[in-house]
Image 1 (cartoon, rainbow, N blue to C red):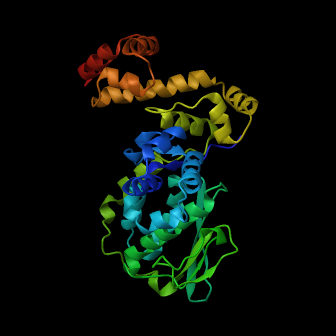
Image 2: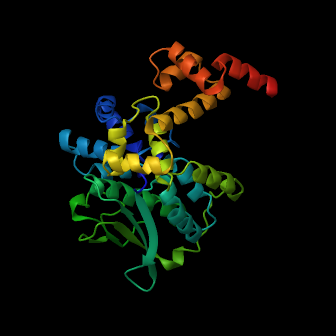
Image 3: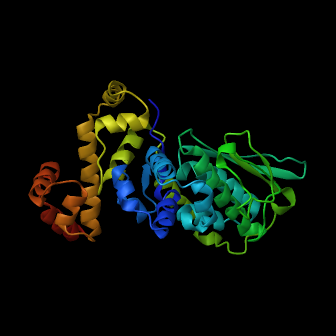
Length: 334
């Protein structure tokens, strides 16, 4: 069984933000599709890539929003993408930015990959990105294209535009989007790419603050989507906390396998789905209790408990002590 593809919330939140500004009932759409509302505020958290695809496809189909990805991408800066954008901005040159981007894309979206290739001329290189296939892929490609161009503009200047690009024909007419309207476009592809003149690679990024780069890179790595199937299941369950905890049936669907295959994978790793969800809840409970920003009843609700007493009972079963005593003992240890 392969891992469940997950994306960083910051790579998805520009879509509901754009729609909300246009008056769409974003919360209703998200709830109907089981997309956690916390994705709007917890930018470095994760959500299943399939949920992002469902949301974009639903908006395009039901709300009639054509070229949604390009429209959102035109209004989005790479710096809106949280730690990912900051990591790129901290590069010393455009060449280093591209190297960082290729490595950081899977840490932002495990359903995407990026690479540097040959350009359409000997004096250029191409930046390429491909998403896993999904109903909304063309729209997600359009969004990625414009955000990647914005990333290159950190070095090339805010008016820079590519001369050649490639994008799926389903992305529609490009003439209304300033950054790409003048480019020669190849349309029979299932990925996005654009040329970058080789002489720009050595250009320095004025806004770079290299001293902060290691910490940002570390944060990206630590919170990245897991390549391990069990790890990705745990991250999927954690993504549902505060909203919709996925059932074993939905988790199997997100993984693209049957329930039996999922259960066999868990069994091979000596894990039962119910125990896995319980463990994720316990780890999150400890983190939130020690963080001290939420009351116990708020934590109970966040973890999906109907009332605080059920949470207290479960926590005591996990640790042998109540949440209140756990906090007091930790403070005493400190």
